[in-house]
Length: 257
Image 1 (cartoon, rainbow, N blue to C red):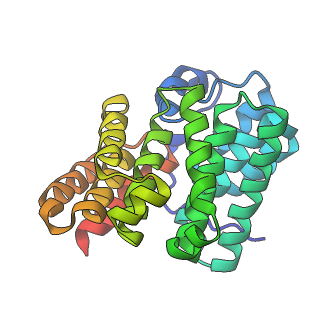
Image 2 (image 1 turned 90 degrees about the horizontal axis):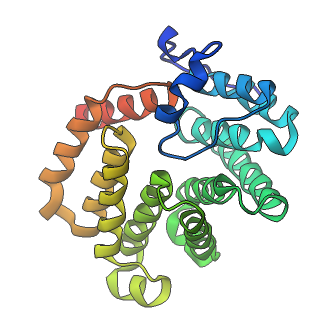
């Protein structure tokens, strides 16, 4: 397949040599990914952070299981932000979910085998409609994987964001009563998860974007001003890599609408 180019290339996102390890904690504070020992996996992550998502996927997969997390994250971010063909998007996301399930069997202590599984299924669900995805039983899989991720690493902010968004999406689509009884989705829990994520990664654009979206999904117009404030804050965040830049640009686009 032909991969679309990252539209905001910036030398600041190129972490050559020792710069990758020096900035690793900041770049991965959301997903708690450990710094990889293999140089080829490090190079795949360099491609990912620079926005060369196709190369990151290819290089990651060439490293076997050790490179799955970078390949899976690159494919999911690319599918969510840059792929415009719905069939290709869904195909990429299904492939990620399948690879994550292989990881869950072989390396069950890998927190991002669980998080990225849920992340990919969440994006897939949005692409086919959340209602349809819930009917197909995807909600339970997403919640289970996120719960596993947080059991392995309680400071995984991205898993908290995704689980908070899960509560919001379910409540929005089926209502508080059915959402609570059938899927265990609660407004207070969703809000608490997203607030906790923002405390863990206080200058994150995506934490603000997802919190803003969730507030509107769960509380409607009553929280619109809070959502607008969060979007303004997200648009003002300083991105450290391609993914964060895509988040900031998404916030700017939302404000411009």
